[in-house]
Image (cartoon, rainbow, N blue to C red; front, top):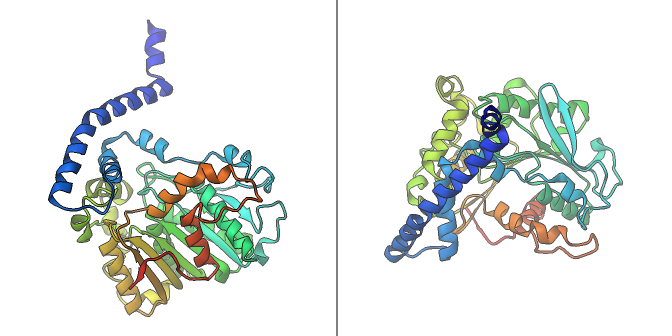
Length: 389
């Protein structure tokens, strides 16, 4: 009997139990979600198909799920599957090589090439520092491995030598802010000091919460007297951890993000006295981080993109206005009728198809999110069809 009791409390069984309970709860709540979606569509037209409307509503409702399950859902980093795929079976054997230092961890997706002809890091024209999203509580450095590899392929097609390094930052609530900022800063210093990469060739690209961390990093580099990167890119950035933008209400039923869940995530990250202690990093939408400081001192040339149906869009618009007013060279695009993270959604749906292609097969248009980002990195501009503000 005692053995059975011990088995039932093992991590594996606990995880299984949580999964079953979560699945049952979702099954119970799903009919109500569907009814509410139908009711809203009767009152007002939707930008989405009924299927996608229900999908977004289901995702919004998942904030109650145990954190362990949410992390398992968000963790897509099967490096072995990528290495064994038709597309990358002959890629550089160091693809996905881990870098571990006392103050940060990360992975090299590629170092100048993905075909085994590795070049000198310091001689590559662009080094992409990728910072993943996940509200600071989920996600992983290699979750976007396949899209990042596609970006490397597209860069090579344009004769652009590219390094891609992805940061594995610590997650909340186990790790409080500024742990993540310290890790990002250490990773940046590793690139420019240990690997001797020219800061002007570094493109810091952050997604969602990673966008907030990218902005925090840029500000911290100035505070520490370190050279800033050549460019910063922000994919639907979580610019305001106070979650006070007007689009939280106007896009409430148009997005996959839920305000209550984001408030909880921010509390886990920087709650308590952290809000006052690190006030400079709380809300990048209101003004420059500190009085007397200009965004033009913090940010190099910057690219920002977000969906028009994202609950974060009003805060991002405010940030863009402030940065432009301060003299930042900033390219900004809103993709109409798109929710948070839509570029990643497109590519995630196409990953399996892409990996089944041989290296010689044409992969054009298979992963549109990666293609858009690659065009920006290769300095070919925005051609996706959104509108520039």
